[in-house]
Image 1 (cartoon, rainbow, N blue to C red):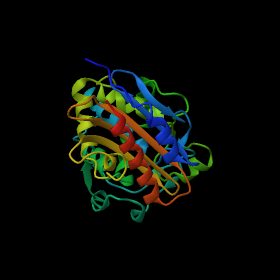
Image 2: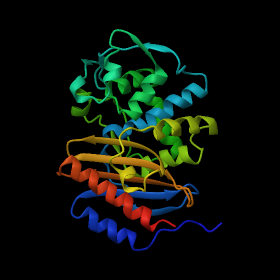
Image 3: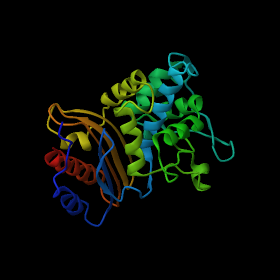
Image 4: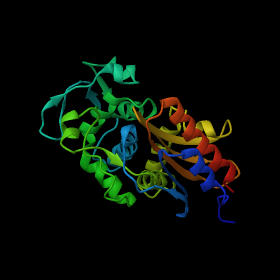
Length: 276
């Protein structure tokens, strides 16, 4: 089989699209080759991309019998800071997942929380899941993927005290790409577990970035992340007649959210058109 290749003109096109903004891009196939690396080792605030290794960690623990994803867990809104154990809570207005909030005072399975943390990018679901999974298991995923020390995920969503004491969630494009490639090539866990993780990512509801740059109907499994000044997307693309690839686009720029989404979609389109 002819190995995949990227049109040599694509990196220059990506540079034009990025302009003066901080835009990190990492593109690799599932055989181990990296085809495009632009500022891929620069740290960005993780936003909700931290939910990708959390999802992997939860499913790995389940496969090992160390966590039951079908266990009913209490839905609450009081969490302990990673910095000093002080209590903090989240605001529903800052979340995209009303279903989990509607369950406050009741229970939901960890599988439900993992799904909603990913496909709806739910913050409450994320913190509830992280309570049970632990940051240590997330760090193990990063280590097993071969990530650099520049990607660190020591805290939950909304932990302001931890962030103020430099316990912040930081990622690089290359490291997020390594995690997702480990899912795609079935090396970050056993094949069935990787397939389960990918299936959750393929049900993603936030599709305004990398998926929007692809032809309609193209298979894509992705995880987004965004806050003011930050918009990211990490995607596994499986074209019908071309080799699969992992594309990561991270942006840290003082531009409107829609403009950032357009930039990510345009980079995705350029890669698609140049991928052979």
